[in-house]
Image (cartoon, rainbow, N blue to C red; front, side, top):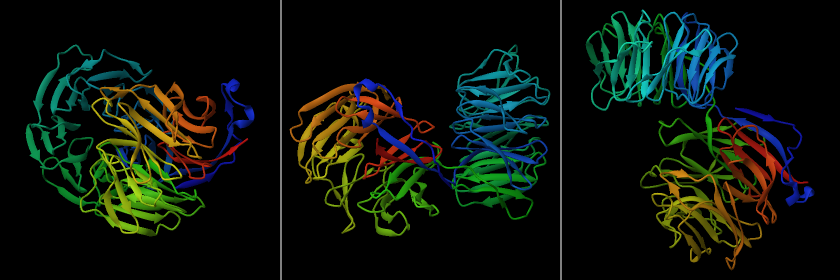
Length: 606
């Protein structure tokens, strides 16, 4: 982890100055940037001479390593989960596919070419390096690599493409799709496509490689086709790699089992790792194996020697929680879309202590007081001291959480409100889980909750096919209903510090899961529920800073808003797009997740 104190001047970009007093804006001072170790490596490839290894991470970074020393030559950020990495035949360039396709100079890491919105599935080079092919959905695009110009019209297919390889003479391109079909096509597109065969039912092509007789094809269910022969591993594979000559392969499954073998069944070695395999690569001489796991391991094997641990990638900073006193954070690191829902996380002390890994962490929340934080595991709940990592309370459920892992809020009586798909209460004094009082308990997807100082709860929920059954629900401390507004998908709710006003933002409906970029935002009297203010704005998260100003996250990023006039008065630039925001109970410590890292800020009025 890198925990850096940054001394920068206040970020103070004023917009719409006519709607607010200039002295009433907020000073936002960067305090720390926290990067998390233990990220998942999702793609890897050896250079043609076997001296270099390129690895890509789930957070979208590309890294070049020296195989002999393990030193990192350079690191860059193409963006998006990297799915395929391929060296050019001369070893001087690297192509990587993530959210985009990028080509980099091996010596410097400088970006040589960029194609936007290609997807992470596959890219390959011709044997002479003059052409590059990459998948873009259900089509294949050829690129002439001297000037990185499109060489031929797209090759169109019926299903999304997952693997490709050029034949040894560069006159044929073999293509595999996500229903297991293998096609032969000419790069020029002048020869009709020909379907060669199809892997068994419910299989997709996971990897294609060159072989002396043509090509080798591997499916995600462990079916290997080579020279008309079929070999079956009979397991669901998470990662597959083939040697350059197609003579050897490595295949890893979701249990951490790895098979390193020759394609002609003359040699085989098995490895047993601690977690699911996320990426693998074989060098040209198939004498070295790189394999990575979803727990962040990056291992290099040579012969019978013990594996060498290589530097890994940073984790994706997902859900965050800050302790009530602002001294500690809990971060739930988010894995790739295909990883298990019960992931890992970290406890981070903001006074400089080393971070502590949370091996079983599906969700996090703030605690009741002090440095307390709440960690939800696969089937348990832990209240921990964020500075020491010691458990204050531990409770195990009879059954694991569903994939709808609850959110956490603290009730006025010290119990924890566990939201999403119905409310539950957890009493730290007794260690018991109970159903929340009606009507707080309802089969709604709870998006946000707010707690007033007198114990009133406000819950914003989404339900229905297009959000038409969502609601805003306000109850007293005992759970008795005080106010309800139904028929709206409520994104965020908050009480003002004095408890007199209630803010909420809602979307009237969705259209097949696509939310409108605009919300209706309302402020009501929190006692009489009379409507005080209403506006239209793209707000998906809101927290009051004081009685007049609030901090909000929307389409335009992080902003300070005038809560009386419902207009933005200041924009806060954190350097990267904001994915999640948390405000400490003191309303002066701001924590932001950008995906790459977690950033903390100190807020004060000018």
